[in-house]
Image (cartoon, rainbow, N blue to C red; front, top):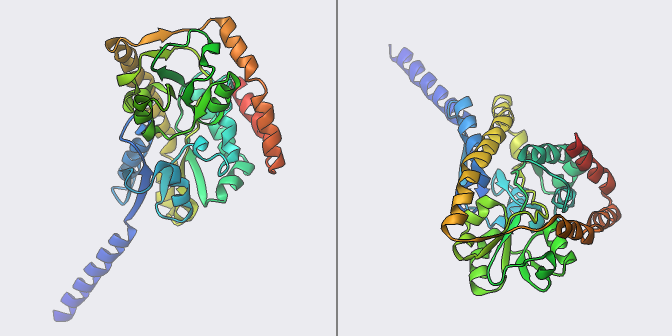
Length: 333
């Protein structure tokens, strides 16, 4: 009986250790707070846990693991297993995906933004580019066209932006340079203080970020239709960590991405945009709308930016024209 008991205890301990060994936890580096911009990551964590009965969990950290501009570096050294970052924060580290931040690409919806992003993410040159950081691209964080909330005199024409200090990253910043504004590429977490202190007079964001980061609390005007572009902010995994997952856990993660993105889009087009109009009205923020002629002049001024991007990145060894053509062809379908 004693031997039987010993075998039973040993078996129980063995199975206990095996169960413990099967449990996997990934740390995920985000920033700010939970908002529309992170809803797909929140949903992904929920789905992965449900599909694996809690054996695989994503621990989401809003700023506790890294600064937002250092998330790609953290991924590269395995400081955490998953992270979100924006291409425009460090274009030199991820030049391939900056094609998605070029101005006036003609993106008409979040669904179109997802399609273009996933096409670029799947390109071998992009995968090689991010592979330098031991990063595997999982999904985008699709955002609508950016517009400006600002203080001081509202710019009645596009020409009124001349000399104005604005927060604008990536291709949006280059577009604003084309109309002689002065762009600053500060991160999202710095903008409220910069706007309040006068370091910048206007901030480009998608609607959710204007609400999340408080620019509408001090802003006096908003451009309804300038639409100079958007930013591309992928969610990536550390490649070694991804490859180290069991087949079941990897499938749980990757198969959940479409549903996570669908949840994100539904939330953004629904709750977020439903809150945006009333938020502006409640604060008496003036809506500035530009004529078709003004917008055409803006596009004309920014017309050489895409070609300059192609030339610059071709010189760096990227198939830049191929990537741009891929984006444009995907958006035209």
